[in-house]
Image (cartoon, rainbow, N blue to C red):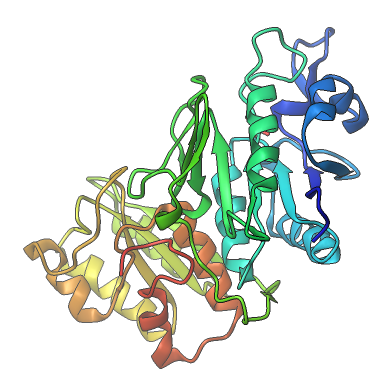
Length: 343
Ligand code: ASP
């Protein structure tokens, strides 16, 4: 590690680097080099910053698993050269990408901080500068020769979160993200404070492992009162389907109708993995707590416990990509791998 931290800024797109098309009034991505011109303050930070940009920066609504792999490969290629990584990303799907990266890197010992903004960097009232500058500071924070943060995080509006615990909860407030089931890992006020006891610790002797095989034949199925047999059947019978994130009610409850349970049973029989996550913003699935989840537990649904939908989707893609043995899959899914759920 050099005496001054060396940070790699990875620009993928999003509002932070957007500009207004005055003809249409729509926001569109612009050249990353212009983004840096807007923040001369970066020169005042006690670190060296290099940057790399997606050839074509994108609105994060266009993100897909190939883009996730591209971000991972940029970090992989530069892992030894840099002390920390800041990923600039649109806020719309940031929790999905950041959750996915948390699983794609095992035994991470350097910070990967996702950030973005609600207003473009050139806007007078922009939130981009604070988010970017503090993210770089977080990524540069070193104590006793080690990075203070050694996991994938999301920094937004004065709070540092574990990425795989976050969800975008507001489309216009500067405070766009929340982490309903896990407290922030740090806060920025007059001082930049870290809650060290909450930060994920990797055993230093373990070598980093990078996983790039993600299974994308999966769906999120959100229940609603009145959902028809036809709708559930069509989804569960999608050709090649490998996994389902089933968004249920409350603590993991679902209709007890026999048609519903039978459809789930036959999907499970075909080897499709189904994880039960709650539609509620906070709290945990407790299978068997109500009569309306007893049958789900009996037929072998995976409990998503207090995981977010974003993180459940990422974990499903990752574990299915790893070709875990049938008998180990459920137990592994129910085990916290990167701090994404309770024990
Ligand atoms: N639509 C933008 C995106 O996610 C919003 C943002 O950057 O905050 O790319």
